[in-house]
Image 1 (cartoon, helix red, strand yellow):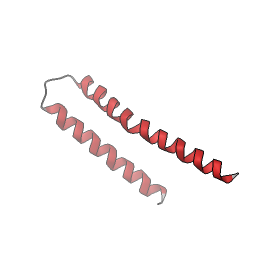
Image 2: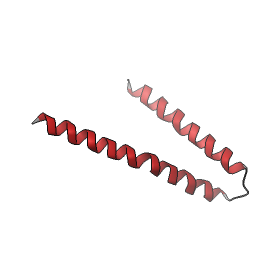
Image 3: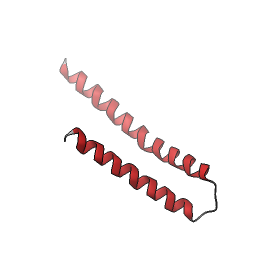
Amino acid sequence: MRKSDWFFSLMFITLGLTCLFFSANAFGHERFITLGKTFFSVCMWMICPLMIGVGVYLWLHYRNKD
């Protein structure tokens, strides 16, 4: 995939998550900061497994090169 494909893919994922959280937050009468806290926690739940996967991939990739 080209870099522009990755950019648009990440842009649509971010846009979808933002719409999801705004619609979920619209039903409650909570403050805007609650949306930020929820968005941060979901992003952390997505980033942690991704970083573990990248770490395992790099470890296996460089281990097999020797």
